[in-house]
Length: 271
Picture 1 (cartoon, helix red, strand yellow):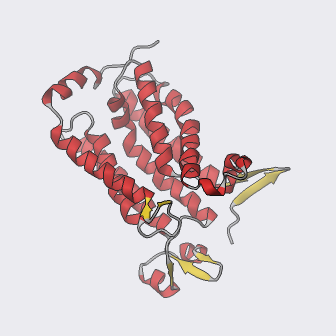
Picture 2 (cartoon, helix red, strand yellow; picture 1 turned 90 degrees about the vertical axis):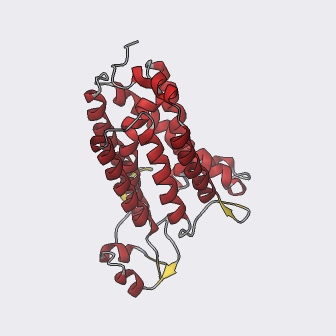
Picture 3 (cartoon, helix red, strand yellow; picture 1 turned 45 degrees about the vertical axis):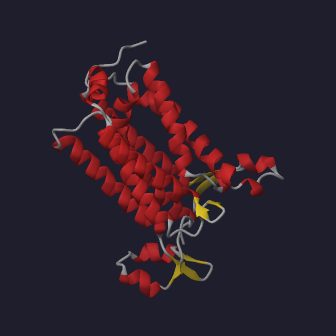
């Protein structure tokens, strides 16, 4: 049996969930840095962005989760800060991260879409890695199923064993989202390297479109969704994002592309 806690020093513990999330963030930063350097950005550009992006993203993910589960916290506000007990929502982290990137890009005299196009493939990669933190915590799973069903899907035994919770086997929806995120990362990288007609913002819209569909599918299988009435919040937001991405892709005007052109491959000015 895998212990979610790696080790403990007094009241402090180091958990696999945090280590996996941090690993994904570091790998995404390193890969983004390589692309940024090819575009003549300063070496520290992406590293400095992560300094703001990671902690604020975590706070945003927590605020989003608490906002939709307020009844669980309203009578004990201290529990809001107990993030180590679980309870973060990736859409909240993405919203907070988007605001940070907008601010940071303006601060560095470049356009937010340029920064987003650099990092979005690796954000998907980090999300795919991060889902294995859910595996360690035995969370973010789907409906109850039989072991025979899981074996028929060619799911490895170590995952099936971990999905045996409280005497029941569950769908490893964390795995489905992890695989789809990694595939999405590969698709966006191939588009960036091979598609000659790629324009500024196309990769960002590709990310929004891909993750929106991915999350809509997987969220419909999960057993721990956040709801507003009978509506799954993440599914509703996913639909909005997919529609937005499609409309934005087709209505972009040539003059908008031209207004961004000076940002695309020029180095940012140092403050």
